Amino acid sequence: MKKDYIFTPGPTPVPHRVSMAQSKMIHHRSADFGELFSRVLEGLKYAFQTKNDIVVFASSGTGGLEAAVANCFSPGDKVAVFSGGKFGERFVEISKFFGLDVIEVAYEWGECANPSDCERVVAENPDLKGVMLTHSETSTGVVNDVEAFGKIVGETQALFVVDTISGLCAAPFKTDEWSVDVAVGGSQKGLMTPPGLAFVSVSEKAWQVVEKAKLPRYYFCFKAARKSFSKTPPQTPYTPAITLLQALDEAIKMIQEEGLEEVWARHALFARATRAGVEALGLELFAKDVSRASVVTSVVSPGDINSGDLVRLLRNRYGIFIAGGQSKLKGKIFRLGHVGYFDRYDIIVQLAAVEFGLKELGYHIELGSGVTAAMRVLHEG
Image (tube, rainbow, N blue to C red; front, side, top):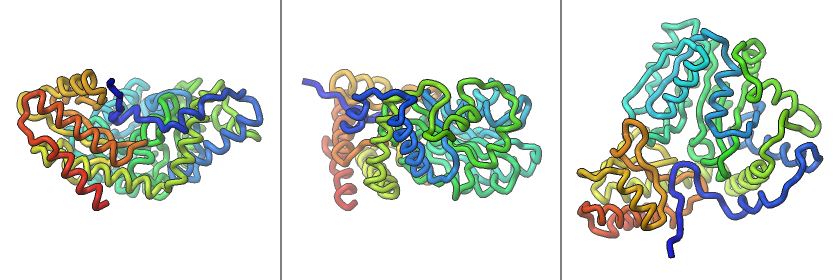
């Protein structure tokens, strides 16, 4: 018998009670849906740590990124995108697709974005309309310093737009306190819900810009969403992903029961334990020490082992789903997820599987050494 385990940084495992919440269908113009949607919107404000309006779309997180660009800018607007991985590059691609004048500040994959570069770019470009940053870059295992960037951008007229799709409810993120004008999240990461929902926090500063923005949008329209959400009870402009919203409602309840700071601390503990296990196996961590994420641990594949071979072996033989490298890192790194519905035993299972897989691929290790190191961290808490 082979039991499957999802240990990727997205989609992530879904709790049983969240799955069961999808078993009932309600109508999206009913009072029941209005009550559900009200709870979800308030719960998302808790997750984002904001008093701002939240808009919700039936899409993956990328739909939320596109919505952020399409609603907040006009053709030819100058924006700065700080990119150090696959998803930072996606912000660049979307911005260029919509005809924005993009200043790309690119970093080596595995490095975090430098706030001093933001200071320089802002000073050199007083006509800047937006600054875009990825909070948690899952392609490399890096978390960027959103707070430091927010202090800089918040003193300007530019909008601060942040992709926190994998970071939300996994690493500290404080929308209002950190002066984030537009924050994009997704359901399938720290919020422990199946893929298919994107949500965007929109500040009052951003709303003023949205009213004047001229890029085309129809389905992904902030103003249409806000108009429907402001009704009593709140509605959506178009048919929503009803069962996913029911699942998200239950997932938010679980997060509130645990407490957001406790959720952040749990993720940080699991990240430390995973890194300890990896290092005990003599493996190299890919992300630099100061920027390592609590969402995913990126590991350099040892020797001449192609990381794709390890990913396939674990999936096909052991039912363990981890992630390989993307784009320029394909075959070079593998990524161990610990975001969302994870407990300490999941960390042990994942590391044990990596040990089996590496051993089978010819890498010399002492079985149990990584697991033992991780258990020490987990025991000490």
